[in-house]
Every structure is written in structure tokens, then in C-alpha cells.
Image (tube, rainbow, N blue to C red; front, side, top):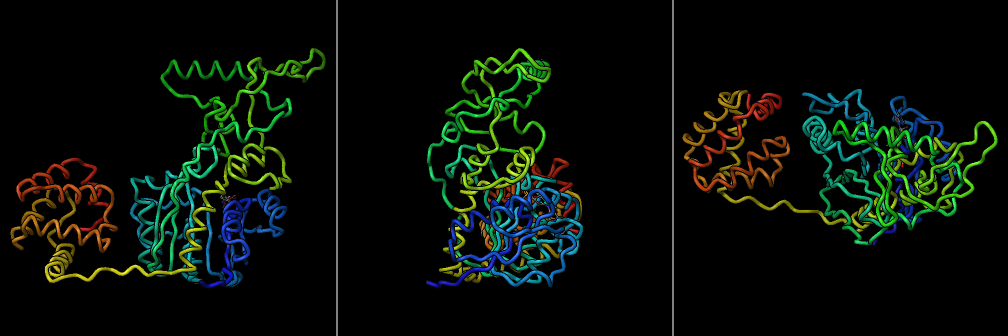
Amino acid sequence: MKTMIYKAIDLFSGIGGIRLGFVLAFKERIKFVYANEIDQFSCETYKANFGENPQGDITKVNLENIPDFDILLAGFPCQAFSIAGKKRGFNDIRGSLFFNIANILKHKKPDAFLLENVKHLVNHDKGRTFQIIKDVLTEDLEYFIHTKILNAKDFGVPQNRERIFIVGFKKNYEFKFPEPLNIDVKIEEILEEPVEESYYLSHEYLEGLKKHRARHEAKGNGFGYEVIPKNGIANALVCGGMGRERNLVKDKFLPNAWKKEGDDIQLRNEEGLRKMTPREWARLQGFPDSFKFPVSMTQSYKQLGNSVSVPVIKAIAKRMKFTLDNPIIIKIPRINGEEKKLLNLLEKMYSRKEFTKTGIKFISSIETFIENNYLRISNVNTLIKIMERYEISKIINKNQIKFHKKLVESPSREIFIKNVRELFKNSENQLTLTDFNLFS
Ligand SMILES: C[S@@+](CC[C@H](N)C(=O)[O-])C[C@H]1O[C@@H](n2cnc3c(N)ncnc32)[C@H](O)[C@@H]1O
């Protein structure tokens, strides 16, 4: 077992939640050589806990100022979602914050990376944004990646927070994401007691929320205020909007919580409903109570809403450490004669000029192609397996993958053609082909 100390960099570091997870997993075997964060208040919290000030704008950083390192960490902001439409390659992602990560990977070629984002990234722009990100990482930068959505509640904290994680290695190493821990956690385990009176909603504010909810419900809409039962789990912490109101808790009624004198004294609600404290939010994200927040309460909530669930990161980091310490290269199975023939056919199929942009013409092209090549249905199944193995389907988006699945299920050539027809009947599928330009 190697005992090297891994050098890491922490991009879009926020308050350092990802860093903390890695420190807990790697212990003294990790050294942070660089961190970057644009927000001044997040930097203050980072400095109070890790001793370094990461202040800076990643779009303005000179690559030469980043020391060499082994592991890149980045919980990049949703602004990366501006990668949309027809963009595909490395040069097309310029102007997005994801480009800055990709560019550092390109020039520094670290052994491994972990990227984190909201679950919605996977479906954004019908899955194309995520596809672009994966294409850039695998095809342009030649990394081997593993992706998975994990939920904080499966890793010992009572918060329903789903996030997408992308782990990458320079080599095709074996890697497994951590399994859920199956620990039953409840919100009451992280509540502080007692909390200051100011966390209790004022009588007036609660009445306002109730009226607002009634109006929304009458229109059939949901409205984001929610009381989490003591044996329940919190909604995902978010930094804006109704973040705090979506995670109210019912505490003891405060008999002395109103006073009759003074102008700005507020009457507290009679139900004991209160917001959670920043420390409770920190616990929901798995930060230890020793973690310092030298900033205002508003900033603390914002920073925690933006941060990560530390136990999830720690669990992933442990697996990454295991892979880096014990690297096993996954071997691609050898192809036999029949598969080779089909692979050639497939290449031909993609390069044929007569494959056209519309779904209808595509069907007839595929029919002709099958006729011309005497493709039997058993071959079609092998062909799909090859496409999957060589990740040819990687360049094909969700609808087309559905199309391939349908092919596998086709018991005969006739049904296969019928399935193809059905799948390409609706405009969404035609649009997909047009946009991807694969067959033009
Ligand atoms: C989703 S948060 C990451 C939080 C972090 N993982 C944590 O544990 O606190 C994204 C962060 O990117 C920062 N950011 C946005 N644009 C940036 C830029 N141009 N340069 C550096 N940081 C930036 C934001 O201020 C925010 O803190």
C-alpha cells in the first residue's frame, strides 16, 4: 500500500465542505495546495476554519499560479447550466464556469477529480448539458468517469438532499460509489435546545404564511412552508427563497414569548413553530459543532445552503482514496470476429451520407441499411451490446438510448422496424436527431 500524500485543490470552495469531507477521509494523507472562492463572506468562514483565504475569481486565475496537484475538487455553481443547445466540444464550453474546471484539468492532468452539482444538472436541457460535460471529460480530456446521484439522508444526516457526483480518474481504474448506510436518522437528533426567542415565528408572520398557503392551495399550487415533524427529515437546505420556511420545526410554546411593552416587540406564535438555527443547519449538513461561522446569520444560512453534506463527501472520498491507493485497471474485453464485423458495419452506418436529419427518412435509411447488410435480428442485439460496451451510446442522448433499448426488446425484424417507426413518430425524437446531427 502506498503512503503518498495527495495534493489537492479546492475550487468554488465555498466554506470548504468538500475539503472537510476529504480531510476526514484522507486524514494526514491529503494536503491542500490551492483554493479558490469569489464570495468574500464564504472566504471569511473558510479562513476561520482552514487558515487560508481562497479569495479570487476563477475566470481571472492564471493557470501558472496553480501549483501541481493530484486531486481536483469542485462543487461548481449552477451557472454551468448555461452550456446548452448544440454545443458539444471543449472549445464550445468557453464562457461557462465548467470551462474553467475543464481547462485546469486539461493543463494540469491530475490523477483524479470529484465534481458535485444539483441533481437537476442531469436533466437540464433534456440531458444535453450533462452529456456535454461528460463528453468533454471523457472524449476531450480522456478521463474515465463514474457518475451517481447520492442522497444525504442515506449517509447519517436527516436531510433529503440529492446531488449528482462525477468522479474521474486519469486511468480506467475500478471505482465504486459508497452504498447507503441504512441508518435511521431523525431531525430531533440535531435540534438545539433551548434556542433564542427570535427563531420563533411572530404571530403575524405565521398568520401571513397560512393565508398565503390557503390562497395558493385554492389555486391548486403548492406553497413552500413546511413543518418537519420531529421524527421526520428536513427538506434540502437552499440558500434563497423560502429556504428557512420550508424547514420549520415545532418546539415548545414559549409562555414568555411576548411582552406587552415596547414598539418593536413581536408577539410570537402560539404553536411553538420556529426556524432552525444556523447551527442546526450546519448539523444537517454534517459539519461538526466546532466549525466556526464568523459571519452574520444571513450569511451563515446562505453559505450552508450552498454547501455540501460532509458525510456524503467523506464516504466518496474514502472510496477514491481506496482506488488511488490500490489502483486496478479495468480491462476492456477482447472482441470476437462477429463483433468486429458488426463494429465495422456500425461505423459505416454512422458515416453513411444518406442518413438524413428527419426521423422518417432515418427509418427508411435504417430499413435499407438492414436490407443491404442482411442484418439479422440476433446481429442487431449483438450490435447493441457492442454499442453499449464501447459507449457508442454515449454520443447518443436519452431518447436514442430508449430507441436502442427498444431494439433489444424486439423479438423479430418486423417488430424491430415497427418499434423504430413508433419511436420516431413523435417530434421530440426527430428533434433529437436534428440537434445531434449524428446521421447527417
Ligand atoms: C455550490 S457553491 C460550492 C460550495 C462548496 N462546495 C461548499 O462546501 O461550501 C459554489 C460556489 O462557487 C462560488 N463562485 C461562483 N462564481 C465563482 C467564480 N467566478 N470564481 C470563484 N468562485 C465562484 C460561489 O460564490 C459559491 O460559493
